[in-house]
Image 1 (cartoon, rainbow, N blue to C red):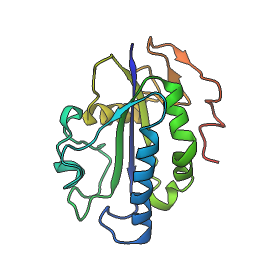
Image 2: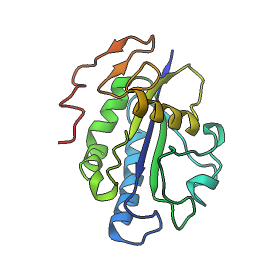
Image 3: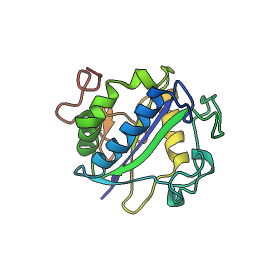
Image 4: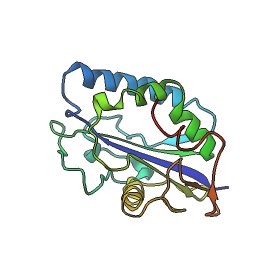
Amino acid sequence: MPHLALYTFGVLKSPLTDPGPLTRELHDSGEVIYRKISQHPGYLGRAEAADRGRGTHFDLDWGAWGEFAVPTWYDKGHTAESAALDATLSLWTDLRYAFDAVYTGVHREALNRRYDWFERTGQPNYVCWWVSDGVIPTWQDGVSKLEHLHDHGSAPHAFTFHHSFAPDGTPTRIKDIGPKSDQAR
């Protein structure tokens, strides 16, 4: 049975090492969100660094998730002092569970605050796609899918919750996923 891969990418308003309260707030909320999401039905796993975050995203060992990569339009730093990004890569049993995890609970609360932390880039900030059972998506897969989504819109191999596709490539619409529910409230 195929699994849903979900890649998210955002450009932060300040570097990850910024000691300001907003950066600390984002970091602290991320720990709570990851803990809650890992308990959500349908969650299979996410990219986690083998060395538990001792370095920047770029120099960590991500194991089967591959070498860390960013979209070509990311123009901030790659060092510990200058990196200003947040990215996730996760696997889900299906679209509904992933949608519910993103748009309810503590993650929903964080989404409501995203413009406190993240720049408005005009780029998509997430992409979904189906992978075969047993396949671990890589960071480069996520970047390629996100860039394809930006350049060409939703397609069976790179889509959003709003314009989603079933594993067989047919367009699908899950109850409560649509224009109104895909917007922040």
